[in-house]
Image (cartoon, rainbow over all chains, first blue to last red):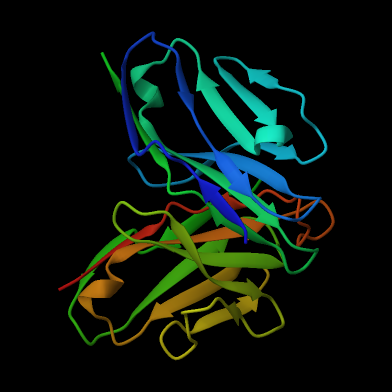
Length: 116
Length: 120
């Protein structure tokens, strides 16, 4: 079975704190891709990052960083020095399948509230 | 990437009526997707709409309830038919512009702003 679990339903932090959003996935496919999307109150999903199953290098983009560990089937997302504008629902997604018939499987999302 | 617009952005409808949601993308794409996001929930794929072929529906979604049109490479519609309060959701379209025409498992999907539907 293919599944994405985001165990944290909601997290509240005070501005400038660091916060990590967890994502655990399940798949038997050897080739797959992982994504993070941000959904601000406006509703539109904003693409943040893509990672393939063969690349376990961590990635940093400004205040955002991602830690991919195949051994634990996790793809966690850390925001450093959080800001109020980071308040949103964050979704982790798994892409599996073959060309032409792939699909995304989304986690249930983590609502992040950053308080001023 | 791609810029996607949806119409309407929101609507309030009466039980038993139908609503057609439009999705327009600023570039030609082969693959488009329709998702449903029920209040406070995750995204669930309704169907994949490829231009030139019938839409492929996921388990639990049927064409009679959610007919989809894909007349060209930049446009698609989703109709929610015979609505009930349980259909109250955000409906999102997404596109896969891809690097080789789309459809690869590594492709990034880009999402429209969504249509917030409330059924009374």
